[in-house]
Length: 259
Length: 210
Image 1 (cartoon, each protein chain N blue to C red):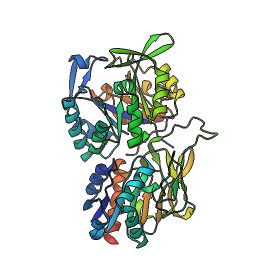
Image 2: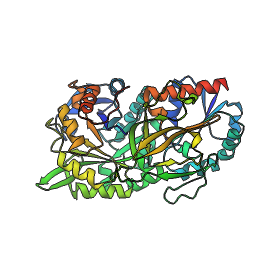
Image 3: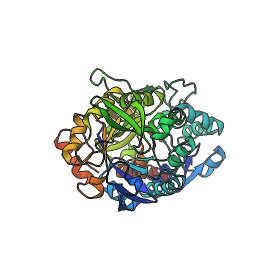
Image 4: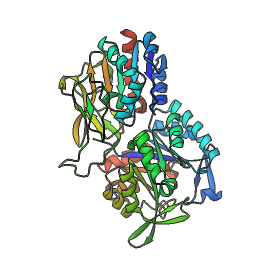
């Protein structure tokens, strides 16, 4: 049976892993430095992480260049799935990351401004390596809207509708990040995660809000997510990947533990 | 020396690194002429079936692989490099012919009565059930071992005796095959941590012994 995945996310700024306190603040310089991305990747690899996501929060040409080096160094010693996001705007940007050792590339704002990028990437590299990441914010009791540019800019798109469109264009996976929940450690937004997961036929990764072991289990069960992504709880040593998986197994969720 | 067939497949660097880590002397090979010093071939692959076969045809690697396998020499195909061994794919708009070394089509996952909401592609870690306990590629890798999968399609071998392992995702499918010195896996050993490295080491050892 396919295991549900537990995925540490590394926000990389100038070759270092950082963590913003709340959504969008990282870009404003409110960062806590967490360390060397490759050293962290090795640690999570040993803890049995199912995959690793590297996110370039500078989203600049310079940032992309240092990210290529981070991916290469990680792929040299961690024989596990790697996903890269942030600042990927062209099919050639995707190709650079994949050749460096990434298995999937994640696009967010650039997919909204140029949906053809999803199609072009999927045609060239296959849907299985094109991830569309969605930052969703609850703007009314029954409405979650897609925001871009690090959560600063509204798009008027409903999260479920955009997710369906992205999949129709060729996205092979959706990362759903709740802007309201991100950084709060109060739990994932179960409602929008479940809505998106039920409206698309591809795997959905839940992101934003992980603070406890119970949060991880509930977003996989009630939220119907296929994987959970978290940063702070791993970086600051609150839990190891293994502790999360042991808890999930106790809840009857299939996980890979014998690593 | 193991020839890693280079037709611009996205995962070539990862496969190369993992083979080296497993003790192999690896050379990237773009043409059939470069195969003369090789003792084993690895065909990597991600993405589309047609892209893989058309690129191989452009570089005249398709005939070379058929000849190599016909001579009974060691071969390992990974993911699309596994699917390429078959006759044809049901992938959307596919028109390329497979290598036809094994009989059967490459088909897409379908939701089932038990799992009507099956997510496609299958992305993540799944387990193998050994069908051929004597398969040297899986030495030290018992049933239940986890490997990393990322795919929407999988081959259906017409000859069930070539199936080395099966895996269940909505339905049971052939997650690897073995016939003589031909080995191929739907999962990615280069991304499957210790289990994947063990499998590649098994291949490197059998190439050395061949």
